[in-house]
Structures are given as C-alpha cells and as structure tokens.
Amino acid sequence: RAATRDTAVAREARHAADLALRADPWKVAREALLIVMVGLPARGKSYISKAIIRYLNFIGCPAKLFNAGNKRRTEGLVGTDASFFDASNASAKEKREEMAMETLDELLAWLHGATTGCGCGIFDATNTTAERRRAVAERCARESPHVTLLFVETICDDDEILTLNYRMKLVNDEPFDS
Image (cartoon, rainbow, N blue to C red; front, side, top):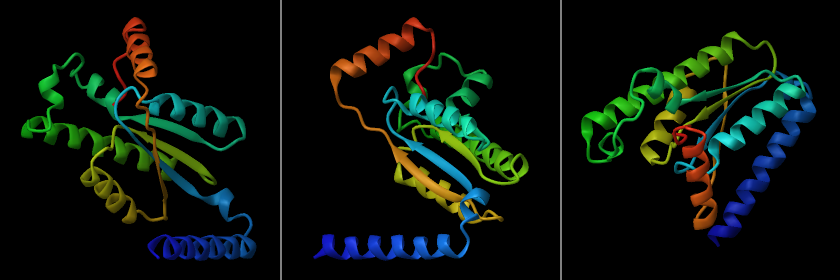
C-alpha cells in the first residue's frame, strides 16, 4: 500500500510539473538549480559533478562547482589527520559544518548574482548526514528567488573500484573529495 501511495504521489507530482511546463515552457530556462552531491569519499561525487558542469556549460547553461573540501584546504587544513573527521570530535564537526555552510552560501550568492536565466550550482561535499541535508534544504527554502534543490547520491561498494579510486587520488596527489 505504501508503494502504491508513493507511486500515486509521484504520478501527481509529475502531472503538476507537466501542467506547469505547458503553461510556461520557458520556465526551465529561468530556473536556478542547486545540485547537492551526497556520498562517502572516493565514491565519484566530484567526477560526476565535473561531468555535469562540462555538459551544462557546453549547452549554454552557466554552471559552477563548489567543493567544501577545497574550502577546507584553502583555509590551511590540508593534511588534517583522521581525528578532524571523527564524528565524536565536536569542535572539528562544528568547523566542518561551518565550512560546508560557507561553501553553500558562496554557491547561492553566485547562483543569484551570476545568472540571468538558467543556472546550476553543484554543492560537492559528503552531505551524508540527515542533519546536514536538512540544514541545506532549510537554507535553500529561505532563498528568494526560488532555488530548485536536487540531491544526487553516489553509492559504490565495489572494493576493487574503491581501491582504484583511492590509489588514483594518492598518485595524483589530490585529497579525497569531501
């Protein structure tokens, strides 16, 4: 029953979106889209994000990547030890959340200021906790003009692929995506 109800809700949502698009077919060309990547490190978030950015820019839609890990590195936290990422380390968790929200704010400022039509910003961070995703959604809900929010989760549990991803990042001297 729950699956049937979910299917019916999804069908109604698609129908409403279809009607809205028919009423204003250019609406999509004026959308501000924020893609929030979700996934553990070395699962392909940055790789997928860069591919999306290349494609959107190719078709003429301004798009830019905002990576929370890059903010951490530019703030002098390159090579931090594992304790910085330990969930029980409250001060480090607070700092990680602060940097993530600063990255999100930079993305939103760019999205509203740099685009006059369609525009897409990608928030590339782990975003694995429900708390973080809720904070992102709440922050975006306060935006005016409206920002469409899309969460994209990357999942990889193939040990061989993960090992190759870890090695590639180490060889290229690139820290894991965050």
